Structures are given as structure tokens and as C-alpha cells.
Length: 69
Image (tube, rainbow, N blue to C red):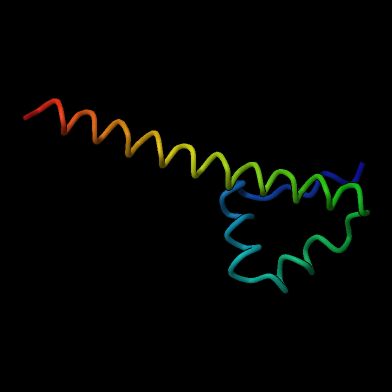
């Protein structure tokens, strides 16, 4: 399978897709449609994971700060 295309990290690929969509498209155009769909799903999941991690961090900070008073 051509999925040997390895991106440095999920966050980097998500950032690349958002900040430089043309470059991202050029890098992924060698993939067949199924592989492109997999990469897209991974990027979407990475974004969701980042949002969830931020929410947990914020909740933990609020709990820690709230408990200090």
C-alpha cells in the first residue's frame, strides 16, 4: 500500500492542510482516493483529539485554581 507516505506528526499535517492547502494537496495527490480518505480521517481525528485535550487541560486548570481558594 502506498501509505508509506509518513507525515512528521498528525498536528503538523493538520496545520499544513489548513495553512498551506495547495502544498498539502500536492503532497497527497499521489495517493489513491481511499488513501486520501484515510489521511483526511486521521487529520479530522487529530483535530478532535487536540480540542478534547485542550478542554481537559482547561477543566483541570479550573479545578486546580478553584480548589486553591
